[in-house]
Length: 291
Image (cartoon, rainbow, N blue to C red; front, side):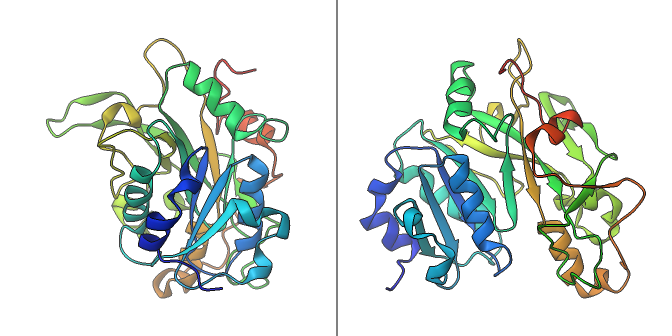
């Protein structure tokens, strides 16, 4: 079956965006595609829009999930592909629809995600009058690049236990923005000489609610400043995490960095347990008032 282009999908299948939460997944290569799709199906997303340059093999999508996954042809390797995709898809959905966006080999975790759905979490977040949620991108990596040259291992994934920090975010006049911080850490911090300065942050507003005039910017922030805040003014809110092999893949693939990196493992590497409690224990996401 021929898969639709993004324009065709939006003109003929916009009804699939009628009710959220909806996940937009940008498939950049063939690595960990099935685990990525299955993970987000298990999170409870009503619909997944899987964008890929070529049609995905049918076996990657489970038969019982076919109605919840729409494979759409889109050039995910172009510059600012995430912003182009999100800003095209979101206006086709009703206002106030919850969205998530991420990439293949990335996995959304939120507090208590093993026993609660993303819809339940976002319903609570909505009650707290929040329209977006800060997520931290936690870099995952394989411990041995000789055995795993693409730096990806689902069974032996590692991550950094320490080395995360935040800096005040300034506006054009040099004043600090209210309730906004730039977060750093992981592989982007340890190998910053190989990462462009505008790609070193690990904060991403990956969960957000649609509204008119909302636009995702190329730096993973939004044009409406309140969307970029980590909490409301009166108390701490929920945050989530995106466990991501994306930085490791890029560093292992790039000719300039791969010749200089023998292993990503260091004294603060720790096995990733694929469980939300581990991320909460290390302060890499917060339950806020949700218990």
